[in-house]
Length: 418
Image (cartoon, rainbow, N blue to C red):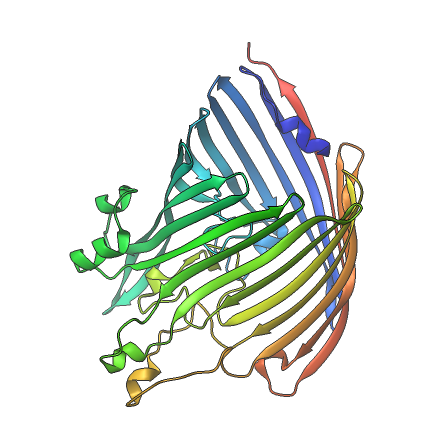
């Protein structure tokens, strides 16, 4: 599609370098207009038939202004190597080593999406079964111990099994874990994709944070896809002690996507729910975070959201988009200190969802996106956002129109080392 076609279909021995320059302009009532610049450059090569190498570096103004960013800045820009990996691929096996992002299950995954992590991953196709594995190093945490500071290593591991029952039905089972500690290295049992991680950490008597779940995609018709995903952080089975009154902690997402609902008109509806304390844990090192952001495609926890999207295609490089969403956000956060209020009472414990004063946001927008020629990408949108209980202040309401414009230029050139 457009300039991205330069980065596809590499022949053996071929190398291509590319560059990107973009700006992201955002303006709304009650806020100053903001413009974020981005510069990226990189290359991709195929030195052998089954081996690919890819690398890119970025200078990003938006990242520099992110309060969670702790790295160096240069003239208001944050710089980093965002991708650097080697990929070995055959028809049935794929191995990636280096810094890269993974997308597990759904395209907007509750499990793993979008974060560029240092580590390795592989996938093996065995008939109708696909086995996948991911291991990565996360950012460490510094904790105060006595009069000093102790640095704790953090890691992520995950494995999944996808069953392709037919071209129309896929079901995936997954398990992930965030683990670490002062001086702790990678535990060997987390390297085995056939071992049950949760059982291993219980047998070892170690406090790690494990997650299990499943996802699916079903295509009942040629132009329709139904999908869903459930991630379970903690689920109470017993009811014998007061500790068993801890609320269930989980995330769920489900939706439907229809192509050509009307000629050239696509439609998507999706619902997401993440309960309070999901992705959190009593040890900060075990939170499902990387550099202050979730490892998956969620807003955090203690929220739900219903969204609708209509996309009208005029041709393969131009579309009009209409979005509508309703988002309820409670007061819980993944980074909150861990609390156990169910231990402060006797008997059943219940809490509302979402918790506290709930901020409620309705957003409606329309826009256009596509390519102008082969080298310019644009994404324009305008709409309004209506918020009740703004900032979790009961009764505070605000409606604000907004405009956003993203423009990027991309260029790629082939280079021969022969």
